[in-house]
Length: 41
Length: 577
Image 1 (tube, rainbow over the protein chains, first blue to last red):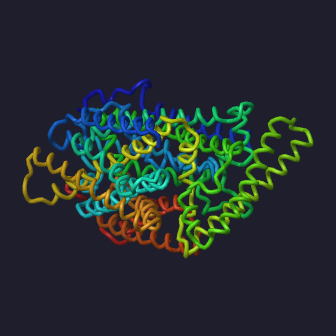
Image 2 (cartoon, chains in turn orange, cyan; image 1 turned 135 degrees about the vertical axis):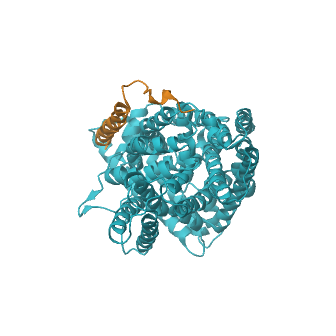
Image 3 (tube, rainbow over the protein chains, first blue to last red; image 1 turned 180 degrees about the horizontal axis):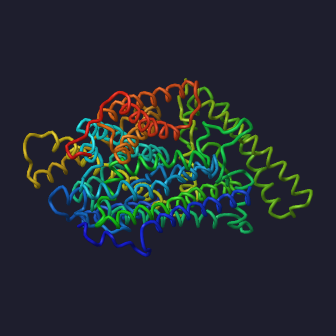
């Protein structure tokens, strides 16, 4: 089933953008959760 | 349980089994049975990965954990998104290109048969026992809470799913996990809505968060640094979550066949990657919300009577012990404390924050909480008495106690169904992966007879059935032996994961290391990890279990490199790698 379609990256030009999105989202999430912790403590 | 609850429970469970059977059609060979003909789209892969990781205990234990210890447990998942990225870059392309059925097949191609056999064997032992515990843990809770017979609860928890798992293999597992997770999320969302709805009229969602925050339950981010520096035995903090959690997630998703088998079912490499990356995006928010539910339940019990101990069967144990009279006195005193608590909480809601009445009520509440904590401590001490031999941990009972006591008819049945479905999702994937490792890494690998695809297909079904029976037996044994076995099996995973990951890291990143060097290193580091664990148990060292994964993985990488350099002459395999 592995065809040329493998090379097609959804939404972005290549997978690096996806990796950056996942790591970037994690960083934003940690900052948000830190703010959340401080706000309600 | 009421009749509507039973109807909801039975209809949901039977519906899932029928759906699983409906989705059972696959090619009658190993590709069809273990990889769903590599035809599954990314969103099913995503739900399958999530359904495999989230067991019943995830949904029972996490709210209870937030209730008692706060939300810092979420940090345990911070390393997971990073691990998903590393998997997509390294593991997925290799596994897909080699068209393997199990992760351990790759180790024979890279090293030798003994490394493959060792890692596959460790997987079978660890996963077989832990799947038994996955059946036993929620069964014990349900049977204790609802008075069900433990043997039949184990049989229903671990046996019914065997029907569609044996018949349909990986494809049926993946598609039922999709439906199971939809029901699980719907049930948890309704429970969350009901907690807020059941709060007093003038107390809203954000007020509940402030109540939780003031009690230190919204401690999502903690640094792990104390007066004397970084605390290495602190289980959940930012550093252990990112680093330890990364190694744990990489070993679990990259080397545990129960997960590898899920993303190998994807119809292309892109779909495998997308499923894993989406898991990296949604996992932390999902855990955050499950834990938040625990904080809301905590706030709820500030306005309602909180049980002195959530596992009421253990109170009955005390009632039949020498502590019977003391317990009765303690309960009376506890009830008075609860009445005072609810009175002061009502006062706080009506007076201004800067008034003297507010400050006085806060001070009374603090002393009430201290008193309650002391009484709970006394009960735990009694349960730990060797003569009583009770279970002093009631964390897993907190959420279900709330469900059974306060949720309306029908919804209780749905939430009990959620526990079954969450368990089925992870157990079905485990049985499928246990059968695939058994037939691919052992039966087929060492059999002198050439098996036809049809014969392999039939044998795979038999192995799935046999593993199902084995796991139900382990679940029943776990109940008979008690907590000691559950704890031992939980530790077992942490002891082996790091070393297995180390072997895979060497295989992927250190092309010149030979099979002998990595095999010897794995054995030595495994002994080291076990030694650290023993020293930990004796209190000689203080290291949280997450760090054992780091020690195992980094240890194997460094020692393999050193052994290869100093002691052993590099040996290359047939393919010249």
